[in-house]
Length: 187
Image (cartoon, rainbow, N blue to C red; front, side, top):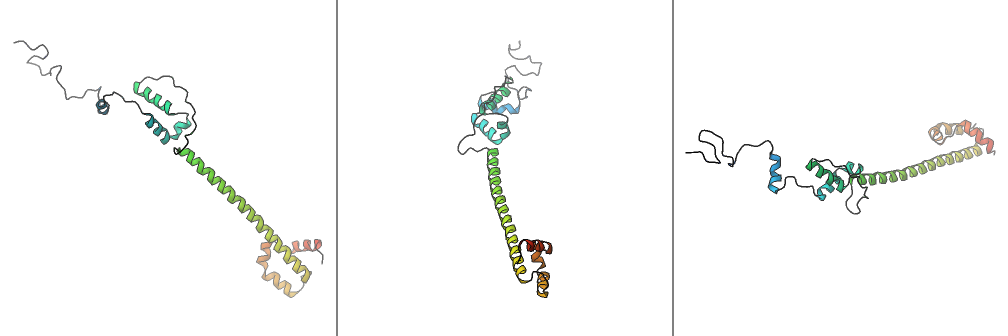
């Protein structure tokens, strides 16, 4: 009896050429199972996925990438061919609810800077008001003292200067300043 035309002879252990095998071939891996189930060898990236990728990674946008460029790179990676890259078109940020992370960060940085500038201006205004108030109190005290005891000889005046030393230092009153004041404001 002769062996069948498509099968091996009785003496060999090799399976027939059209019989299914359980051994994995190196060309096919488990990674391709899902692709094979879809009936495609490598499905293309959808524009929605490319937009999501750009939204998650703003540095791609900073490099000039847009949806079209990401899709093109995806196709090139799938085919293994590297075509000359088309220059990425700069696009305006989308209007509406699609806000990129770096735009949101910039928005809040600008808001903070504006608020801080407003607070700094208010602080400067208040510091000037404080300085003016201290100058006014020093002038008033000097005017009162110049009218009551210009020579500062009274024991009451000496006790007042000692007791109110902290206040007088705070408003910038000292004997040198008082002498200069008396020259410009005689009794």
